[in-house]
Each structure stands twice: as C-alpha cells, then as structure tokens.
Length: 200
Image 1 (cartoon, rainbow, N blue to C red):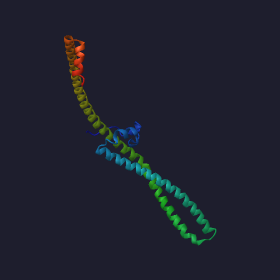
Image 2: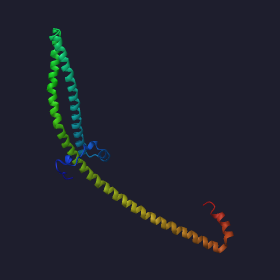
Image 3: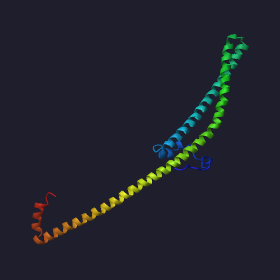
C-alpha cells in the first residue's frame, strides 16, 4: 500500500486522542493488528511509559528534596547552636544527596518537555498505520461480504427450487387423493388410509 500522507498537525487540528487509549480503536484494531501497526503501537507505549516514569520520578524527587532541605535546617541547627560536630558527616551526606537531586530534576524536566512532541509524532505514525490497516480490513471484509452474498443467492435459488418441488408434490398428492376418492368413495378410502397411510 502507498505511503499515507497528511498534514503533520492533523492530530492537533482534528483533536485526535492517543489512539491506543481510544475504546473504538481498541475494539476495531487490537485483535486485527498488522506487523507494522504492532511495531508503531509498541513504540508509542514505550514513550507513554517513559513519560509516566519521568513524572513519577520528578514527583518523588521534589518530595525528597523538601525532606532533605528540612533535614539540612535541622542538622545545621545541631552543628551551629548545639555545637554537635558528629552531625557534620550527616550534613555532608545530606548535601550530597540534595546536589544529586538538583542535578537530576532539570534533566527530567527537559525530557518531560520534549516527550509530548515525540508522543504526538508517534501517535501520528500509529494513525497512518491504522488507516493503512483499516483499508486492508475494508477490502478483506468487502470481499467476504461479496462471498456471503453469492452464497445467500445460491441458497435462495435452492430454496426456491425446494418450495416449487414441495408445492408440485403436494398438488400431486391432492390429485391422487381426489382420483381415488372419486373412484371408491369416502368410506372405502378411510379403510385404505388406515391400512396404507397409518405409519406416515
């Protein structure tokens, strides 16, 4: 199938959601994936998972940073006011962890700034692969519907022939009955019916 092309901002313009979270998309494509659609979906899932992980890590680091800053205030009070020199290694350790957090947070913020554009881009790839797959499935289903229609036509024809045979057969039974009835009369016919037609 030819490459599908449309405007890059189609996702924004048409307010297309993250396709793999869309119930209608899931119903139509989850069990009818192609190799390339599976690959595109997998890449999108990875990006979404990365975004979630970054958000969770940032939240945790911000929480930890607050705790460490409170700890530094408490330790510095111990060192300065209580002259507790044993607290100095604890202070160094806490400051070291705080420094690591302060270095890590901007890295996460930067990644969280670029991830939405990457997700949007990959969602566009999924959209293109979805459209390709949709047309493949439309063709397959149209062919299948055509086959079904041909079968329906054959069955209709067979049914028509069977109905015709049934009507002809019933007419013949009635004519035979009328003939015998005309020849021997109702009383004799009743006796013969009991003898010859009882089992049917």
